[in-house]
Length: 178
Picture: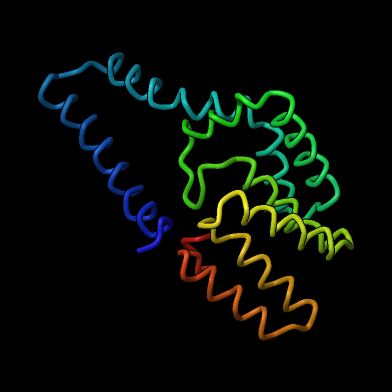
């Protein structure tokens, strides 16, 4: 079983346990709306902290999904520079749930590598994606992006190899993966 498959199995369990715990506290301890709200706010704080320090990453991701490649690339480059200037913010990823990797620099490089073909740089994309694999060889998304890149270059055999590697690491490209 791949790391990604384990994370995909654990995530819903954590949500169920948190929900069950909150409902238990409300029912058995007759918590007021104030205490219940305080518990929920405390559970939301880690995401807000990550959102603050990773705002350029999340803006880049939002623009990526809107297919605004150049502006998205600018945000990811800015965030990459922040990671170099303040390496301690890499640890904030532990406040977020990473389905595929817990290395924010790997996510950033992967996203930049996925953008590069749209900005006309296949060589740069390949270089970035291979660097991501060196950072985290169990992260399936760079393998998937390399499969797409090899397909664009007309190398079907290599494309299939990368795609199968991505699938074996837990990324199938399904709706759940999106």
